[in-house]
Each structure stands twice: as C-alpha cells, then as structure tokens.
Amino acid sequence: MIVVGLTGGIGSGKTTVAKMFGSLGVPVYIADEEAKKLMNTSKVIKRKLIGLFGENAYVNNELNRPFIADIIFKNKTLLNEMNAIVHPKVRAHFNKWVSKQTAPYVIKEAAILFENGSHKAYDFIITVTAPKDLKVTRLLKREPNTTKNKIEAIMANQWTDEAKIKRSHFVIENINLEKTQEQVKKIHTKIAKIAKKC
Image 1 (tube, helix red, strand yellow):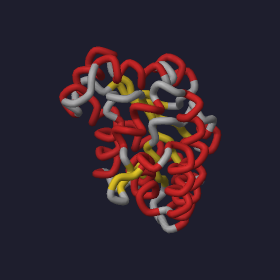
Image 2 (tube, rainbow, N blue to C red):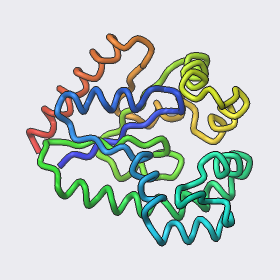
Image 3 (cartoon, rainbow, N blue to C red):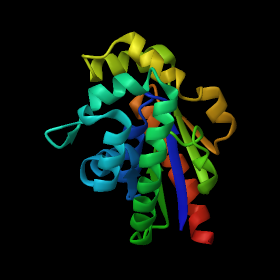
Image 4 (cartoon, helix red, strand yellow):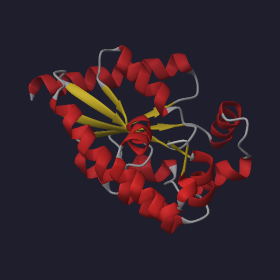
C-alpha cells in the first residue's frame, strides 16, 4: 500500500485539503488529532509529560494545551523533548491503523514531517502552501485568543514553504477552495494510477 505524507505550515489549510482527499474515498489519518487523543489517554505519555512540564501539564485529566503551548514555543529544547515522547506513540498507532486499511493508498496529515526527518518513511509527500499573510489571517480567525506574535513564533519553528517544496512530490497552493479541489483531484488521479500498478 502506498503511504502519502500530507504537510504544510500552520494556517496553510492542510486539514481542509486532507478532508478533500477523504471525500474522494482516501483513508486519512490526522496526526495532530490522534496525538491529542493519545496525550489524554496514554498513561505513559501522561506520566512523561508531567515529568517534563510539571503537574500543571494536565487539568481535570485533560492536557493543559495553552500552558504547554506557551512553554514550548519559547523553548525549542522542550518542544523537541515533547515530540520525542509523543511521536513514537503516534507512529506506532498510525502503523496499526495502516494495517487495517484496504484502499490503494492512504494519507497521513502531519504538521511536522521534514522537521523530524520522518518524510523518508513516505512514498510521496504533498505540501500545502499559502501566502504568509493569508495564513496569519486564517489563524487569527480560527483562534481569536492567539496573537500575531504567537503565530510567528510557531512559524519560526517550522520549515519554510520553499524548503518543503524542494523535497515534495506534489504541491497544492491553497488560496481558492475551488482551485484547491481541482489540484486535489489531479493528484488523487495520479497517485491512484501508480497504486494500481503496484
């Protein structure tokens, strides 16, 4: 089975694109959503995150996301340590999920693919891009409590679109939803054809 990585910077609209592939019948694994679930349900992850961030890491048995977000975007070392705790568990969960799929190909949508070197594990990589000002506008609308400075701090921790594009097999420019849908259909047709030959 062909495994496709779908990535893009914060605010690029990669989840929207993932849903478009899903509507074409492609099984899609949203890594961030699964990571959130695992951080709330895995006793091992909970114990390690409390060890890393202290008792405030969880409130009423739920991950204290604003508290952790505040810390990790100012401290790259802690961000990397958190990723080292969570990512292996998400990877194992994903592999289990893949083994249950029967479609010609699957997609894993993940914000961090190149940054942690996991891009080597995919047959194809799709990167979703959008102009920076549009990304910021989308994020301010989506998360009214955030600030432009916070968004830019997150962006600074991610690879630039240019760096991702160089290492991607396909690029989707997500500015206009109708045009994005057309790009998704074209890529879907190409990958489905390749998958049939495998």
